[in-house]
Amino acid sequence: MSKLEKLIQELCPDGMEYKTLGEIATDIYRGAGITREQVTETGAPCVRYGEIYTTYGIWFEKCISHTNEAVITSKKYFEHGDILFAITGESVEEIAKSCAYIGHEKCLAGGDIVVLKHNQNPKYLSYALSTTSAQEQKSKGKVKSKVVHSSVPAIRAITIPLPPLPVQQEIVRILDSFTELTAELTAELTARRKQYEYYRDELLTFDINTPKRRLIDIFDTKNGYTPSKNNKEFWNQNDISWFRMEDIRANGRILKKAIQGVAKSAIKGKPFPVNSIIVSTSATIGEHALIQCESLANQRFTYLMLKDEYKSKYNIKFLYYYCFLLDEFCKKHLNQGNFSSVDMLKFNDFEFPMPPLSEQARIVSILDRFDALCNDLTSGLPAEIEARKKQYEYYRDKLLTFEEVKAE
Image 1 (tube, rainbow, N blue to C red):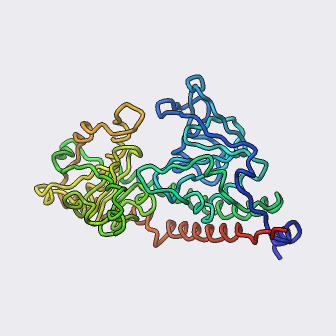
Image 2: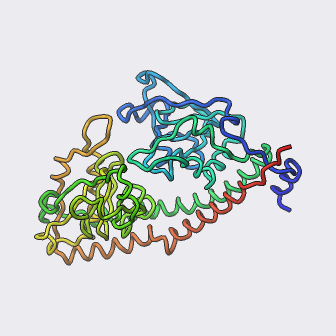
Image 3: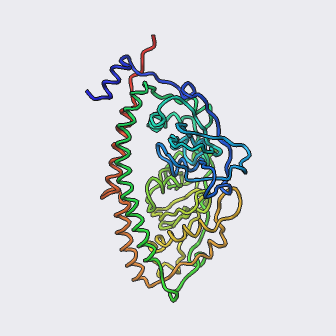
């Protein structure tokens, strides 16, 4: 019998208590807005809601962002052990992602964050809130749209198993061992990717005599869009792939099918052609993908479609790889304002080199091999990490599923 089984038999032989977060919380409240412009390199540590999706895992010790405390008019803090929820997001499936703060500095919580205080093991709560069951509760009743919202009442209503603290601690120990192994493999893969990015940038650096062409000269450009959510027929069929940022996060940058599809009747005119490149030019800036099917993408993306007269002069995979440099260019050339967007005049003037097709093919061949080593989920380190993640998710859900104590 394992240590965990002994603890459960000793401390909760009749089953496990399930409680709502409203019952568990000693306090629960929303953060206050911190704009992108108010983020600084030094100052008071802070978290903005988007970072919960992109940066922090089950738990974290250090904030990546800081701000000048004096300019924040309505301050809301979080401290060691608090659980943070992001109550605004881009997808129903990920809404209200949560993480535990186990650092020791007092930090500021940005807007669209809910802070939960409690007397439990913070890592245990965070693991329990990451299970399939918890995410189903977070997503329940949410409607797919451009932006998805949750709320304090919705967070309070989430129910999780709440074993005694010694049981919580043992579950955390087991799950931490899984995440530590995955973290080691991920660190190794990160180092490999940095090496790949260095060689990629070297291969994509050309001398001043190489001909160049402006983006607007070689591509037809057009914004993506979201078909009306009010017309249910648009969303009842899966005829045409409709790409969002979630597709890049889930399936990489060379995409043959989207997670979500729409009906042909939802398309204005024709779908965008095969071998279009999509570039995120608003909200999450600096991402791109090569789309290998007829498609549509949401309004956060600008489509780049190679003009006919340049199809004999450019290898589309070469242009796809060069768009990694375009991504960095986009991050540096933004319009001023609360909502992030790329300066499209400068975007259109971005220059692509035009080396001979044979040289483009050579570069693509090298980068394809590097890319497979770093990103191919069917082999090597990426495959091992993916297998470990699935193993972790299986045991996490199994460890955090209990027979509920019978009501007397």
